[in-house]
Length: 139
Image (tube, rainbow, N blue to C red; front, side, top):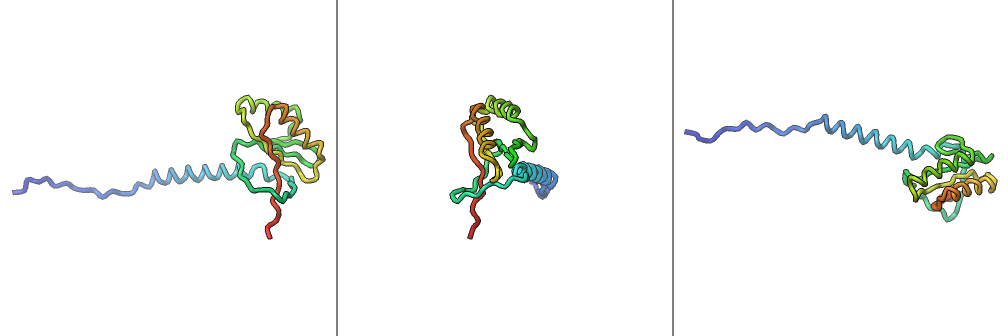
């Protein structure tokens, strides 16, 4: 006489549907962040080389102001006048008081255009400003 109950033990199976969902979300996330990271470097701006430059990866909240040779200011792939740039930067500072800005200027850009972009940052009360340079070639 057997008093023990017999249980049918089902084997634990690996569920693929949730795993595929997670992998798809990760793939979309990494593709979008990669696209945003290369967004500003596609412009035809050749930044100058600096012997003491270090390669740093800027956080996603950093604003990149591009200044072409002819003095045209580009922000988020849109041409901006100094007045429009000041409005955008002032709005950003209201939301994020410690907003960081990187100025990418072509190596043949006249200094007065770079100073104009720098003045817009100062008028918007942005103090965290960096200049993009290219590291020297490795030997």
